[in-house]
Amino acid sequence: GPGVGGHCIAVDPWFIVSESPEESLLIRQAREVNDLKVDWVVSSILKNIDRINRGSTDLSHIILFGLAYKADIDDLRESPSLKIALSLSKRGMRVKITDPNVPHLPKYLKEEGIELISLAEVDQYTASSLAVLLVPHKQFLNLTYKKFIATIDICGIGTTQNS
Image 1 (cartoon, rainbow, N blue to C red):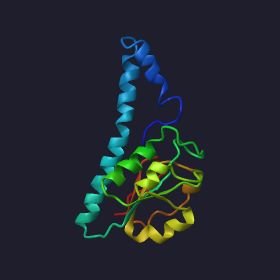
Image 2 (tube, rainbow, N blue to C red):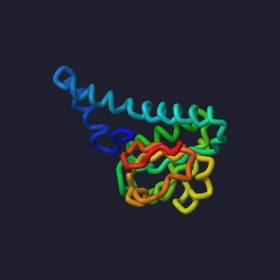
Image 3 (cartoon, helix red, strand yellow):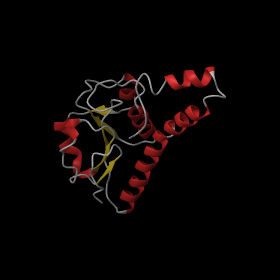
Image 4 (tube, rainbow, N blue to C red):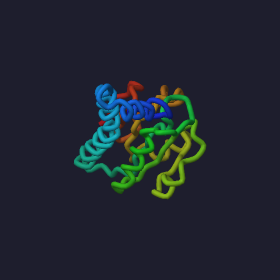
């Protein structure tokens, strides 16, 4: 997946590290490695964009599937998908997010020009967009991703890249 989120696993280990730094070296290293997962996902997306652009294809949008920190919930606390969306937007990418469980985006993402779209709206972007599967919501499991320029499956839904 894109990394650990939520109110416990993403945050609580740092309390242990701060109280007992010498006894929690493995915990620190695990959290540091996991925190780098967002950068790895962004790097994977950028590499795919470079590959798409070399093929003279006009990439219009990146559509992120899933914003919550885990499947089938609406909780955005410490969600790595938030950081991924923001990082891509700050690099000048046109980012759309679809998440059937999330009713609205945080204000700071809207201010970056990131838009939340419904699953029904996704079809109007497929021919010129890169799909990035971040959270395996049940609504995403049986979708066809072949219409996209390419698909990056970060969360293990089981798709393969299209191009």
